[in-house]
Structures are given as structure tokens and as C-alpha cells.
Amino acid sequence: MINYELQIANYNKRMLSTWAFPTKIIFGAGSIAQAADITRDLGIKRPLIVTDPGIVKCGLVERLAGPLKKAGLEWSVFDRVEGNPTEASVLPGVEVYRRESSDGVIAMGGGSAIDAGKAIRLKATHALPLEDYDDLKNGGDKISADLPPMIAVATTSGTGSEVGRSAVIALKATGRKTVIFSPYLMPSVAIGDPELTLELPPHITATTGMDAMTHNLEAYLSKGFHPFCDAIAIKGVEIVNEHLRTAVHDGKNLEARTQMMIASMMGAVAFQKGLGTVHSLAHPLSTVAGLHHGLTNGILLPYVMRFNLPVVRDRLADLAGALGVDTRSLSPDQAASAAITAIEKLNADIGIPARLSAVGVTPEMIPKMIPKAMEDGCHLLNPRPTTAQDMEMLYREAL
Ligand SMILES: [Fe+2]
Image (cartoon, rainbow, N blue to C red):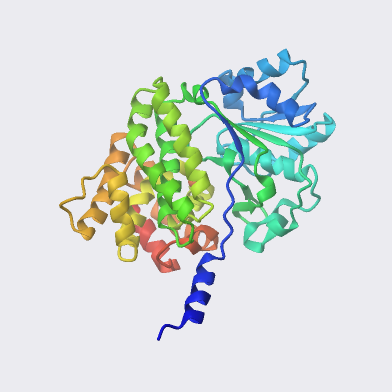
């Protein structure tokens, strides 16, 4: 006798999910030329451009300012965003925003500038200190729709923050990279112009590219129930695997740059489902050791895949196919292991070291990082529950 009530209850439990897809994306080589039209369409009259000194120096802000100027718009620039943004990348920006009577934000850069732009936009209308919006304390509930419009212009292919709804800021008050999450933080429009990434040096292309890979891969393995995101994630893994090597070794290749920008956005869409332990281990490596987020993700990814293997063997076997492994004659165990080897090979091909010690991490740093990794919310959706002992073991293994 089939218990239909139980079946329906289980079915509903599984199906009661919120699936929302992201912001409007204006995509393609040369799409930056539309910046002024987009600004006007959003009703922004005096945008604040939020960026970092590197973007200014390499002339990319000019690519944005040109169309604004042509359209007769006036703008201000806040260009003091740090590599791993802290309050210092946000609060002075809010002051400029107010002083210049800005009425919208155009963030241009990698994840740091875009996240700082989101936080400036938040603080322009929300009075509480940044730590009160901490996602770990359900701070997102305190964020209302009352945010000025925002355009996000990506200049790297990795973070995907331009299509995401979170800002990651390292706050003094929390002592860690703090995730602020709200659907209202999502930029009003994202501009994805792969031409802006043509000058990125190989090592930044490699590390940001591995961030995109990690987003897609961790999202695919994460515990959430989101078949839409799964489909995007596995395709994202395939695209990164196919095009990252070319983007690193032949930076002017517009096709590879285009594909990487697509995969980066796909990663950020996919990780609405969840991320995992790679990100929880990686975040303290930025705050404690000052390392690039994508670099640490790339190094840690194979170790965490191996840790997860016993509980997600079949999912890892799916990923092997996306990573270019011919799985037809392989058992599921062999295919899952081949997925890990494929990531190690990709890292080696693009110059990402296999160990954390190669980038200056020392054993003394580990005890400090373990509690921060545990406090980080990403691992809560890792397919295999991760204890403090596991975190320590993974740091030591990767050292
Ligand atoms: Fe990431």
C-alpha cells in the first residue's frame, strides 16, 4: 500500500524552494558603449563610479567615462577600493556619494570593486553599521528595497559578483570576510564586455578563472536542491575547462575571454544554490595571509573534492565528463577520481601551485584560520559535513 500522504509531504518538502534568476545582463564585446544609455534608463543623473587604482591606471575607467561624457552626464569617482575590501573601501565612498549628491553607483572592476559598490549603495540609504547586515546573523532581513540603482561592469572573469546578490567585506567588527546577502543588493544591470579583460595578465586570468571554476563546481556539489543551478553549474565547469588555458596563454583571444566571462557569470548564478568548504577554507587565507581569493580556491579545490568524494561520487563522475574525461570505460569511482586529476592538471597548466606553502602559507597560520573557516557560512552547504578537525586536516594536507 503506497502512503500517498507521506509521498506528497516528502515531495513538497523537496519542492518548496525559491528559484530566482538574476539581473539584466548586457553582454558582448563592445557593450560598454551602452553604459550611458543604461545609466539614463535607470534614471541616474549623477553616478558615482566605484573602482580601484589599478583600473584607473590601465585606462579602463576612460572606456566607461567616454560614453558618459558623450551623453552629457556628470559623474564622480571613488577609486580607493582595496584588493580584499574592508570598511576603508566602503565608508569613504559613501562620503563621496553624499558630498557629490550622487544618485546611483557604477561599479567597475573585479569582485572587490563590485562588492564595495554594493556596500556603498547599501550604506547610502541604510543607517546601521555594516556588521549588522552580516548574513550569518540574518542581516539581510534588515535590507529594504530602498537602494539607489547600480550598474556593475566586470573587468575580470571570476567572481561573477556583477550578477550576484552578495557583497563580501572584511570587517573589523567581525574579524572575518563578512557576507552581506540580500536580493536588493543585486545590481540593476550588469555589463559584460569581454574586451575589458583582454589586457588582464596571465596570473590574474588564471586565479580569477579558478574562482569561476570553483563557483560552478562547488555549486554543483553543494547540498541545495536546485536543478536549474545544477544545469548551469555543470555547463560552467565545461566552459572553464575548455577556455581557461587559452585565456591564460593567449590573453588577446577574444573568444576565450568571451567564454570565460560567460562562465564567470554562470558560476555566480549557480552558487545561489550554495558553495562549500573550499570557500570556507579560502576566505581566512585572504584575511590572515592576504592571498588572492581565486588563487586559494584553485589550490584547495582538488583537496576538498577528494574529501567530498565518499559522499558525492556520482556527482563527481558527472563532472569528469564536463572536465573532458572520456568516462565510458571508467567505473564511477574511477571517473570521480579522474575529475580530481583533471582539476590538478588544469591548475598545473595555468601556473597555479599545488600547495599553499608555495604561496607563503606557514603552519603557524593554521590555528588562527580554523575558527574563521568554521564561522564562514559556505561550508554549511558542503555535501560532507566539515568539522574543525576536518578544516585543520584539509589545511595541513594542502600545505
Ligand atoms: Fe569565490
